[in-house]
Length: 230
Image 1 (cartoon, helix red, strand yellow):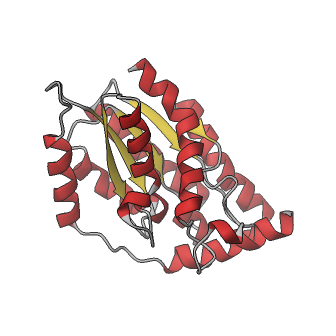
Image 2: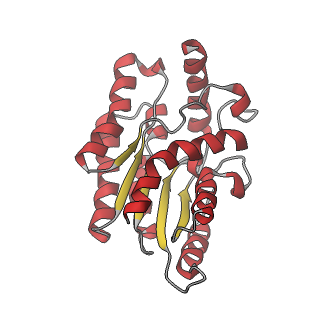
């Protein structure tokens, strides 16, 4: 079981490293416009949940309706909760690139912020300290712009091919930052999906539609209580 999981994670490393950025500023414009215009039938402005992350958040290889942020929007709608999900995922995104991109997405109001970044850093063997610094910079940017924002950290892991110490240090980034910044923590976004062939696409890396349903549940377990508080 462990060997299969590690093998899956190692294959994941290869594709993440190869995935390039495929979304443009025009896509971001469309995201901003759709969020700004969204209101419930009562006319009350919806609160925005920004998912900021990599191809996992973008829904690589899936129809947009199958990406886990959209599945969470469906759950929110079924419960008649006043929230609008904004998918700010971008394939190939590193923490450094995310640090430069976040200001654009903060042009719209953000009430809940879900951070899923860092995996591509780890899979490229970038220094853990630098990844942590970049993620903290992103968190700070969001807090400065929206002091009352509620925040969620999505944890990630890397295979041990960089060495056991690096893998452990990388894994520790997420709970450490979550605790420091009073963020809710999803311990491992790919829990129950990573390394399981039937839940991943033909590349053996990115989740299938069924896999993304599990990702949505992994996040929803943590997110639902935050939405009730707002």
